[in-house]
Length: 598
Image 1 (cartoon, rainbow, N blue to C red):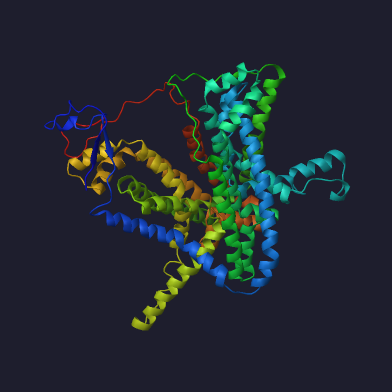
Image 2: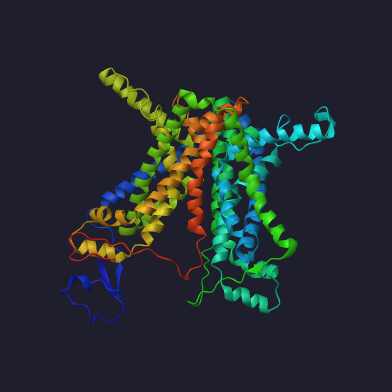
């Protein structure tokens, strides 16, 4: 396998006898086509894709040919109601998240007001709160026995709930409000990054034509940000569709909740598969809408001279109103839930001395750690195969794995457990007939199936980070390593992986925290008597004893802060072209090279 050289300018300065001068900027290197040992990469990618397709194929087969008690009844009654509830929740969360995220991003980017720099960082913190923990804390605050209603009764002298009206948090409206306050940062981060990179010239032209700051936003900034807003809103809606703990606790029967109930409570596997297919259709519709919103549009500066955005300094009461408006979602989405957790944790610290708490914590770390490592390895294989062995098959594989992130946890569990349990039973039957021994449940009875579900669900997040890191490495490094006798695999281990350590660390951290918070897949696929922090919190809330699990919830929130702040730092850096303080470039010694490359 070799690289083809494409000359883009004069080659008079290239001397064949001097290897260090072979790879100048005047030389572009076309990536190699798959030859020779590339079949190993193809086989590896094929195995990964087969595992990714396993739950989807299983769901289709069950939906078409599955049977079970109440199969027809569920299809006629539960499915339409759950679909309608899901659509209402998606519409409400989408609108609220879009408005809140876009408005706060525009204020922070284009205006100057008190605490603006601090608020920019605070606005992403609600992402550290899992949706089910936010739901539990709001019920603790706003339910009849919570501090808010107790204060209302004490202040106005009411004797019971019949004497006054108070909004029911366990309702469709309550679910929309809680999820919006936790998920709007997806839109905020995307909108903030888009506003930072917009053309100053376009905004100034709008102002010279008589547009106000608000008019420039509606006519210029908002249309240019449509691709970013579509992507951020789609992420928020996918998280809403995946939610199980919050919806079930708040009494909203979405498709995710209905799949769980049909499978475990009614025993209707076929009906559960039908609803899972409907959830998958909604996922694909969200992905298609996000793609349509972008439609391969890109906007860039037409000049290399980058100037700061024309920010307006707010004065008088308006500046304090802007501060209060931007702080409101932070208080509602992060501060209040965290205060509830801290209050319960200080009052109920006994779990610190119990073995069950530490065992659940260890199980959470074990599952998340193993899944992060496996996901990282699989992500490296797929991303590097795309870089070095270009083919339509690998391109299609990298596109397909994006669907895994959009699969709700209950849908993924239904699609994985049945075929893997069938595989375990088949192996056990063969061993019994041949050797007279039983293998038991090899995969479905251990943590392997949970790890597989995590890998399928969060591989897209890892591979996106890894591909971004590989994209910053020049193809000249690949060419230099290959001409010095290295294979694609040895070049990966000796050249690329050392340069990608920070990127790989960030990808592993993102996957680790996502796995730590995952509830529906863990709840359905975990082995017997194998509790994690997430399942412990769910069980305690189901028994109306959430305060006893506050320590575990607080631990999940504390760990979740790391990737949230890392994500904010990555997406809201500055405008492209502005001067930055760079650290000294690392010197990387290529294998057998006479001189290190910068």
